[in-house]
Amino acid sequence: MATANTAKSVTLPVCSTSHPAPNCFTAKLTDARSFTQWTASKSRRQTTTSGPSAAPAEPPSPQAIPAVPDRFNGVDQKALQACLAEDPDSCLTTVPGLLDCVTTIGVCNATALNPTTALDDAPATESDISASGIRSRAAAAFDVPADQLTLHPPTFGPAQKDSLLTAREPGADSWTVTSTTSTPRSKRTRAPYSAHPSGGSRVASARPLARRARTVINAAAAGVLIVCLAAAAPAPADPAPPGSADSGIFVDGSTIPAEQLQSLNDPVPYRTYATARATLQATDTLPATAPADPDPGQQTDLRRQCETHAAQAKSSTGWIKSRFESCQKRSYDLVFRNVQGTEARGRLWFDMWTLGFTYDGSRRVDFATSIENIRVQAVPGEDATTWRVGQHFRDTINASDSDPNPKVTKPAVTERDELLGAWDRKPLWTLTYTSPDNGPQYANGNQQRVFATIAMDVTANSPTARNGYSEVSAFTSSVRFDYAGPSAGKYKGAVFTQARIELVLSQKDPLVNESALHIYDALNRPERTFHSWPGKSVPGAKEPLHRATNASKIEENRKKSISECKKVWGDYSGSSLECDEYPFASTKEGSTKGDNRFSVRLVDGPDNRKGGERLAEMYTLNRVLDGDPFYVKITN
Image (cartoon, rainbow, N blue to C red):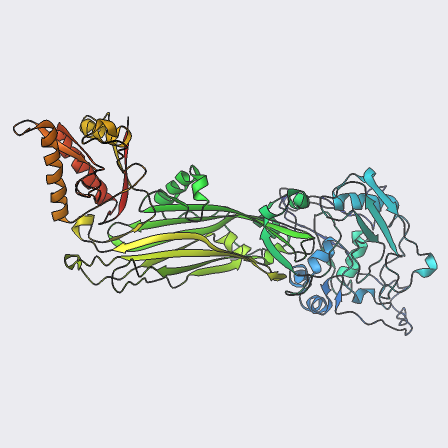
């Protein structure tokens, strides 16, 4: 039905001297404030009698009754008759094809067209199918100015108006309307408008809606008609079954030239679209907005930060804020078209968020993912409420990099493939992956590291699609679980391994300014450092350093660096100075590596020790294990 409190168009005029009954209506809001739909009713046909003893009317003479087709103007006739007999008020939402027929063609009940049933109280007049009426309806249907339409009247004569269910020459009883400009609501520039229904053609009846009511719902069975407040448009043929030559496919909208999508460039929020199609029941209690995040303090803040890193966030790995937080936001634009690629049938837009959280202290990773901000547009006959979107998670273990017997415990549910309406009601869902441990074994060299990749595939589908849309690894996340012991800070935990780790020191920080200046010179002016040699370069800015946890190796690096300081400055014992080395002694790039890409300098003792403390904090705060890479950044 139409959006609440918004009437896009009204087929019949309000009753007045210029528009007398029965081709008009009067309406009044029952609460004088708002409406979601109007209901129009008409009295049942009364039999004229001359008095209580009047004889009953004679039954009509026998005549041939054409067979009623199984499907008429897109409507399942058996389902329609069953509904009329049991619950007429629900027919618009339960009978396949009826809603589209009512809002476009208008003639939907083949049984009511039987010659034994009067179609009208009076034959159609010329005013019913006047040229001006056809022109105004076509202008509304195609959303073009009326003066840019050309009308061609039907070719049949009065004597040719045979049974409405018999076959006739296509177009013989139709007004043909052509447009000299683009038609935003249809890819076609030509469409027939019939004064009478035709079971197999795409026509919109020129007969007033009050008369159409008698064929939509048999007057003998029901007297209430739901009047949809929406502009009429030519109805398409019945949807093609999946796999047929005329079935459709979903494709990435960016692969289609923009000029081919001009008629599908008006996204409608899904809820507005679904409400207009009367697919939401009165008992639905849907939230006005998406439900609040489970942890607003953490997830909402991460989303805000993610918005400022949009370029990174839309990649398959997303924006990895730290070793414990990641965020991906992908915006999708999918077009549903026929397999030949000649006709676009609909368009689907949505945003996909995936937030990741690992934990320092627990071998666990959580993903909070959602499909939201769903918008659709579909040509008449294509029902976007039947479209589905899916998220499918899977995990793999890199056994060659992991410690012995690596295991990951996946969540009970790893995929969600649902109709757009389900996503609209509940956009967010979460998954938790864990890795079991066997207690502390780090003293024996087993840190129980498990390197895993968790990926998500995205799909979109329709009942009329031959092939659905599928994007493999639309999201990927590399995770490491460990039980490394005290060298990592908290004894066990999990991290995102693709996070960039940096030790940041400032030359303006009085506690470490000398150490910061030394590192800055080594990275940017290596000729000022000792020892010096032509073409010298020192890693840490563009090339990462790698942590070393072997105590013996760390001590060897320190001894080597102190000996180099003494070669340059002599014996400095008894002073407040200490030998500062870079790269650090606790890295695999230390002075004993053998490539001479290191620097030493005497700095103030407290400054040197404070720099070492900052380095140790960076290690534990980021769970930097032996061999893990990190970078150094000096600010000014």
